[in-house]
Image (cartoon, rainbow, N blue to C red):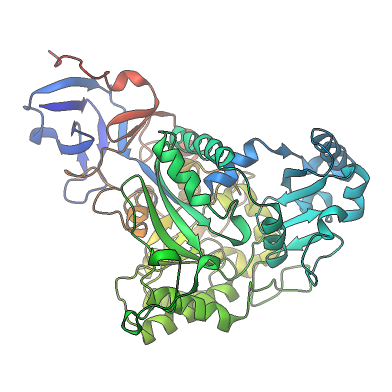
Length: 535
């Protein structure tokens, strides 16, 4: 007997073998079948969806849950208030803490201010607290003198502004956040994801570097899972900082690994280890993404995170040890470094099914596309960067390079798997809003950015379902409404393919189901345990 049948629905299965249906049967959290395969089967509960649209649960292939949740409970500033207003808000936040304590401040963006804050300015409002003012990109910060004097000798900064490795040094000082605090943050961010139709995500970096919060951060995810507070499926990317030399058997070809040799694929359906995260450059917001030509109006072209040879060696060692690689590369010079590393790794140690990923792909030159396809890399992009920050990005790239930003159609035309994600909390994470951008290629202020990179709604939906599942090695259990897969579903008020493009981002998420149970939205969709069969 089935647990539930969803009927009178517009089902977009994302399964090419059977792309559309009107009903879905669910048993013990799995999809049994659609339409005639299940319509005659006995069922405990039938739900009439009244024509609502049902899709596989969206998958966000690159997100930062802990960072998002912590930011929701941190002091937030509004750079639009000017330097004086920002300093006043930071001072107010500082007064809520005891002298000597750390004060996290989020929402920092130098662009509306016209310059960065300085340590000296922060000192005027710190009153002996340690101020950690975090740039929205996650790649930079400003700190006061109390923090600067604690940094390792030789740490480079500009009047208290630190980027990339300097930011990582501050992050290392600020750690650790408590496991309980992290669990609260993960749960809060996860529930936000569910409200947007997301049922699975890849946490893009634990274990060190720019974005870690504790040396035992994985324990927070495990505790969240053990206590029923992990709202959705999570795959944990491990930063390359966590690799260390190991004395493995020579025949195992593993020069570096994390403890016990754990790697991509370890874990279960709800919590697992994903890719090895490798940083090659910074971000466009703080102007640290590594370009081949300077930013418009500036005399520099960003920076690499480390020497290209060092980055290549890390990638090769991770590849040899059996990891899927997720290489952060935003600028086109960084993309060159990532492609070099992947070519080198595959030439020395062929692994055709490695599914290595390049995260962001912010600026990809036309001449890089064929090479991108040849190395078999997946393009994990964040369309909402251009939704919310696209006007600025287009300006700093100039008219020649702006059409190359966060490509869509060019990747698909070259046979490159296009994977959707958000990089939440850098920008808003709603998949429907990102899908709207990939179709219309227009920022929220109306600027057209690379219109030739527009893709069809169906292709955009695939980026957040089937392609994202493939990128996370989960295509056999997630990403489409196919018999045997988890009943992770998103119920929408409208069909994204049928409404005006400008309305896609505002479609209401009626409910989100995880393993057939309502995780967000109208709980009338699924009955409580023990309900008698519907008549």
